[in-house]
Image 1: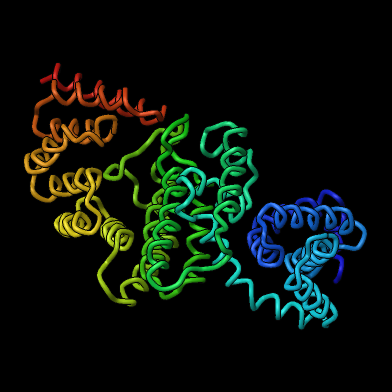
Image 2: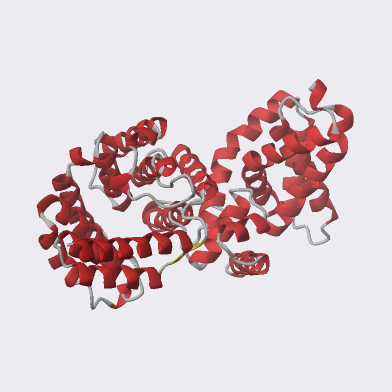
Length: 432
């Protein structure tokens, strides 16, 4: 290890440790779970290593490989914990012996052995935190805590709920996993597909809450999008042969590319067709298109996320709104409706049909969804209907729909946008 000069002060160490922890904590905790077999114990041991670093690094300097240092220190703590455990069984004793032998190796050999297992351990942790035995909210909270390295307070702030609520979700999730004796392993065969869908669902849920916040003052929360993207990219590296993983990454990259253009100077929402496409992030677009190409190369029928990514690619390739290939988007939504039929997909298909074949064609689909129970409190149904009615010149009806949509949304920015659209329709009606 070597000191890093101007980074040897306590403040600098704290700053570096915070950054390293955000990146490395998931791998450290995953490695410890494999060693001690318990999530809570693994977290405590990882935190112990963090405290030791805070105490030692200001004096000794920051190691050349801080992540490996933290992992090694945490593993040493795990050995001490196993020694103190009065209920050690033979298997655990043998594990202690093996770990002690590993400790005795040279540092380079230790690092190589450690690196060899990190990917597998991280994949196991992803499947554990996203286990379908947990509720969706619990999966999201536990995943952000263990894999995202976010504090309970950060997660609560991101989801606009109390720290106590998030803490309870995480505690209950850990207890549920322990009580069910969920193994620390990645599934195989047919179980892999079922469990993978749960993992992808959680990552996309996190992304969506950042991309279009369901409540609060801000329409987008980029930090959540970034966390979801990071998790998706990690999963793509760990499961490179899973087309839907690449499809989800492609979808998130392409959607994230529009974040800067989605809000105006005061934080007001800007809808897709009104966005300044020069503000789209072409680095993310190119990454998204590359991920989509990887998904397509793996072959097979397109899944839920790959189809949505293909739709996103249509938008990304259009340099202007007028150049958008709406006929292809409508066809892709037809395919999506076959793969994952839902009222929301049908509503999105209606928008594409309206853009490709006229507002009347889209409205016919939307009108068929008005009585759909799942959409009764979904603000985008009256919002879409209001837009189509406006295009058809039925302004009184359109105004009522925008006002209804505004009453249903929990997001302040979106509510203001919808009320402004209602006022605009009213002004246009009076001027007509």
